[in-house]
Amino acid sequence: MPKLSRFLAQGMAYAAFVGLIAYFSKSPVYTPSDPQMGLIRLSFSHAGARKGECRRLSPEEIAALPPNMRKPLDCPRERLPLLVELHVDGKLIYRRALPPSGIAGDGASTAYERFIVAPGNHRITARLRDTAREEGFDYESEKQILIEPKQNVVIDFRADAGGFKFM
Image 1 (spheres, rainbow, N blue to C red):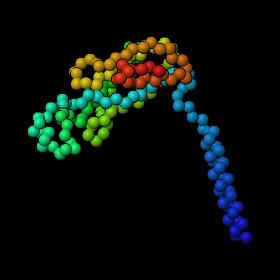
Image 2: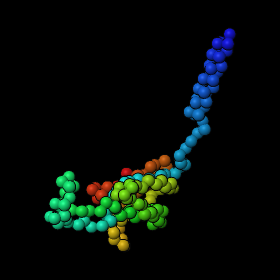
Image 3: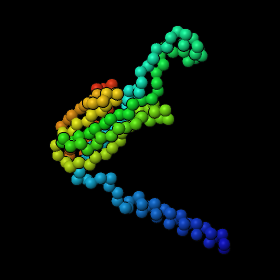
Image 4: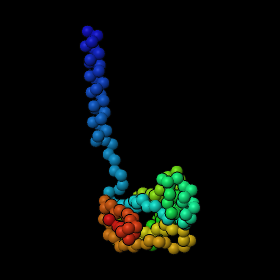
C-alpha cells in the first residue's frame, strides 16, 4: 500500500507541474510594446579605427623578432570608440560613445537600442564617427519612412556597403 500512495503523490505532483506550465504558456499575456505604436531598432556591430598609427619596422627590428612574429608593421591593437547619433524628425533621441569590446579594447563596438514611435511619416537621420576626428561624422544617412502600427524598422550599419541601411 505505501508504494501505491507514493505513485499517487508523484502523479499529483506531475499533474500540478503540467498544469502550471499550461497556465504560463497562455497567461499572463505579454506584449513587448504597444500594438498601436511603431518601433525603430538601431542594431549594429562595427570596429572603429585603430587608436594609433602603424609603424614600419626596420630590417634589424624584424630580424630580432622570432620567425613566427616577423611582420613589416607594428600596429597598436586598441580601437577608438564610436560616436553614434540618431535623430527622428530633427529631434536627437540617441547619442552615445560606444567603447570597443575585448580585454585589450580591440574589438567591435556594438549598439542595440529600441525606440517606440508614433505611427506616421518620420525623417530619420543616423550619424556615426569611427575615426579620431574632433568634429563632424564619417557616415551620415537620412531617410523619410512611413511607419505603421506594429511596424519594426531596423537601422543597420555596414561600412563596406556605404553606411547605414534602413530596413
